[in-house]
Structures are given as structure tokens and as C-alpha cells.
Image (tube, rainbow, N blue to C red; front, side, top):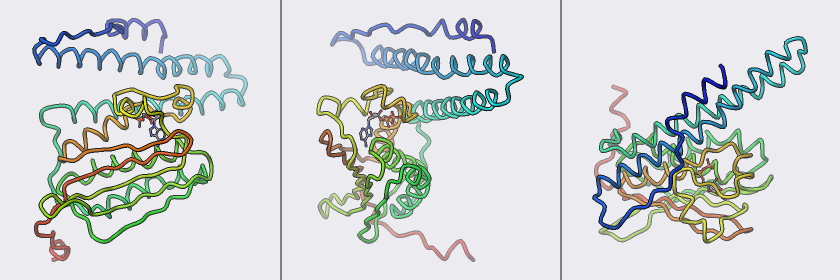
Length: 272
Ligand code: ADP
């Protein structure tokens, strides 16, 4: 609606204050500070698409007698609202994952199903960019956890691999069982031959809202929250996420999760 009104509503959160934490700060104050920082980042990130929606809706109004222009502005309005919706969904996801009770399911999850679903969700984007998706499986792999969260995590890695590669790139998704008998792990590797990530950015990409090369990232329509969500999902499953990358050669993200070796769910049982 009114851009002035939007500014006013966002103003109370508009502090990009730098947080300096002394070593002896209590952990509660640390948590508060991190939360405040998160809110500041959120408001900053919401302003761009909200501002765009506001300007575009005025443009639609002003162009009412020019159908071509209306169509153009309306298309951009849809893109900006989709971006806004994704941002808000990711913020909700991340706040839930960061809370004391992330409300994750605990079921026996077939990692091959997770990969199949993640690939199918990414198919359209891959086709648009003529990127080939290659899946390499090596037999059964089960973990205990939340199938939809794990699917979101893998989808995120696959979609990043597509977004940050050139056209006609190759993205490989592989599932492998590794580790020792006492500590068996499932590794899901997502590799691309895209732009890669500089060493100094490799840890930072897992931070909330951190994006390398703003121009390129903005163009991809991302939010900078994806990898932070992936890291939290990995952590909530007792797993981890690692990154290998070389600028100009590509990146490999490895999601490791503890293997589930208990009884398998009986596939027949729900058909009784
Ligand atoms: P975004 O929504 O921007 O993709 P992410 O948290 O998923 O946010 O990723 C953070 C940043 O890490 C991205 O903006 C991008 O700069 C970089 N990045 C992520 N995946 C890759 C990749 N496969 N190749 C190169 N850069 C990547």
C-alpha cells in the first residue's frame, strides 16, 4: 500500500547496530544479542521486496491505460511477492529450527526417497538452465529423522548447485554409506562444476543472510538463508555439513548423517 506507511511500520526494527560481545557476557545475553541481530537482518532483507512491491503496484496504477506495461509490471509484482513468500517461509523455518523444540519428526527415513524427491523438485529449474542432474546411488541408506526437513535440506543444496553454475553445467548427487562399524554414516554429496566459493567465504556461506557477490546472488533470487537452514537441519539430526570448493572449478557440499541400523518399517503394513 502506501510506501510511507510501510517505512513507518519497519522503522522500529531498523537498526543495523554492530554487536560487540565481551568474552564474559552471559550466554543469555549472547542469545538475546543474536536474536536482535537476526531481527535487524530480517527487517533489512524484507525492505527490498516490500519496497519493490510498493513501487510496482503504483506503476500498475499509473499505467492503467497501457496493457503492455500493466502486464510487465504485474509479472514483476508476482516475482517479488514469490520472493517475499520464500523469504518469510525460510525465516519461519529457521526460527523454528533454532528454537528449543524444533518440532522435527523422528521416523525411519529412506535417503534414496529424499534424493528422489529433492531431484524432482529441482527438475524444472535444472531444465530452464539446461543443467544435467546426475544421481549416483550405492544401495540402501536409512537415517532416523524428519523426512521433509531432510528433503528441504537436500533440495536446497541441489538448487544452489544449479543456480551457481553456468548453463549446461553438471550437478551430481551421490549417496554413500561410510564411517566405521561403531559410527556408520550416510553421506549425501552434491557436486557442481560452477563458480565455486573463495576460501575466505567458505565458512561464512553457512551464516544467516550471508551471500557471496551480491549481484550474482541477487540475480539468483535467493535469500541467503538456505545454507543456514541446511546446517541447522544437519545439526538437529546429529549430523554435519562440509564444503569443499575451488573458485572456477566448483563446489561439493557433503551432508553426513548417522546411519539408522534398527528394524526397517514394514512396507506392507499400511496396506492391510
Ligand atoms: P541463497 O539463497 O543466496 O542461495 P544460501 O544460504 O543457500 O543462500 O547460500 C549462501 C551463498 O553461498 C549464496 O548466496 C552463494 O553466494 C553461495 N553458494 C551457495 N551454494 C553455492 C554453490 N553451489 N556454488 C557457489 N556458491 C554457492
